Amino acid sequence: MLQDSKDKRTYDAIVIGSGASGGWAAKELCEKGLKTLVLERGRMVRHIEDYPTASKAPWEFEFRGVVPIDKRSGIGAAQWKREETMHWAMAEDEQPYIEEKPFRWFRGYHVGGKSLLWARGTQRWSDFDWEGPARDGYAVDWPIRYKDMEPWYTYVETFVGFAGSRDGLDVLPDQVVQPGFELSCIETYYKQQLKEMYGDRHLIQGRCAHLTDPQQIHKDQGRNKCQNQNMCNRGCVYGGYFSANASTLPWAEKTGNLTLRPDSVVESIIYDEQQGKATGVRIIDRHTKEAIEFYAKIIFVNASTINSNAILLNSKSTRFPNGLGNDNGLMGKFITCHNYRGKGYATFEGFLDKFNDGRNPGHAYVPRFRNVYSQETDFLRGYAIGMSGSRQLDGNGELIGNALRDKLLNPSYGLWGMSAWMQGEMVPDESNHLRLSSDEKDKYGIPKIIMSVEWKENDNKMTADFVQQQSEMFERMGFKNIKVEDSGAPPGSDIHEMGGVRMGNDPKTSLLNKYNQLHHCKNVFVTDGACMTSGSTQNPTLTFMTLTARAANYAVEELKKMNL
Image (tube, rainbow, N blue to C red):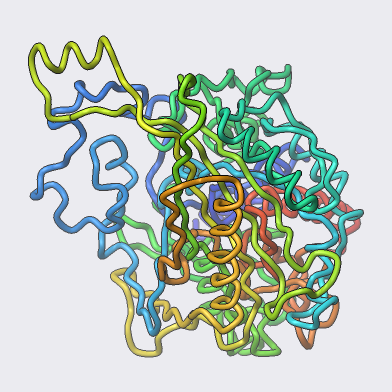
């Protein structure tokens, strides 16, 4: 009976996590014929039927979206404490962590993970990004380059579907795109002025994971055109933007090779000393608190950066007393994120004969322009800038009765405004790390995570440069009421955590090889943000998905050769 039970818990592959990268691992492995178990820490979320507030109008909520205090008690993550998105909120006791230094940790504990909640910005990396560490000597050299990733970027982009433009910029390679979302007149003005005044700076349509001209591959997924509702974080019944729930997980399920198990808190990966490889995954059932083991030939770790690090660090054995594959002691170190501290806003007194109508789920984007071709500043690497220009209604929201009716029927508008926010590359530093507590555990009996990440001098200099440069750009273009400042937001505010299980050629200085395999445990692959050697200035999710597709196909080939 025990053997029969074990057989039922044995698969060809196990994927830990069901988000953007985990969904891609599931799709690729299932398509290639592997019986695949996907373990998700949070609850089940089914596409369409489990989006309770999708497309609801404000008046359909009892208190127009405000949630009474008693219903918010015990809920973490303040940004989800409205009725529109309350279904994504997480209980404060679900996974408490220790902030040795201030850090915001944003999570999505449900099937689909943060792929249901992301901002959907998607840009390829160029060799300016892949070669960054080699150029300035900070962080180890990446074991791959753009030529290794280019065909896989195309592969992923074709399946996912992205809106944007082809801009011919060497700093931001062109990609497979559908028509982008139209720039407003103020954004178009900024684009023209930026090119004339600076030459090497460009404003483009932000590339984003939305369908504007669905192709057959997207229709086959059951997805349709983006409706520009801008209610994306409630869940999209149209599948207009990419999520694992709308795309990769259903695709994997169609193969008949997928088993999805929600409510499965992964405690550790099981390592067999005699076989010299990982043999399975140990979970704690979220409801029963029962420990259960599942077995497989290969394991993909896609639990998101911080949790992937924690799972590997907690996977201890006689062979690996400091965590699975952690012979060099570097696991959990060199944690990075993106620097979003710089924020700006200004108004413009022109174009008063125009206003913007409708909604745009994307925004404009200025690719990195600092330290691209040479080291020109007193800080390393650079930053991109997100931008959004619009004209707001000028009115009193407290009006009622006839006055309110007249205002709605005869709207008036204020000045055009332009927002700007930096997305800076954080240079990896060994002192920025996470580790497991030796004496505090969560309610599942798993060691708590200690976060010890802080901004360094390079981040401060970069933020100051953004404040100076963005202020200057606004001024030269004739904007008024300019306010650009350092918000002081702590690390993690960008939700782009990366590193800790970095890729590299040398097992002495890295944990993973060029195919995302652990150097010292070849049948374990890490392809989410934990694998990142450095962070670039681009949004990272497209690269996570692309690395995953590449690694999954390699893993299947190695399995066929009996190398795993």
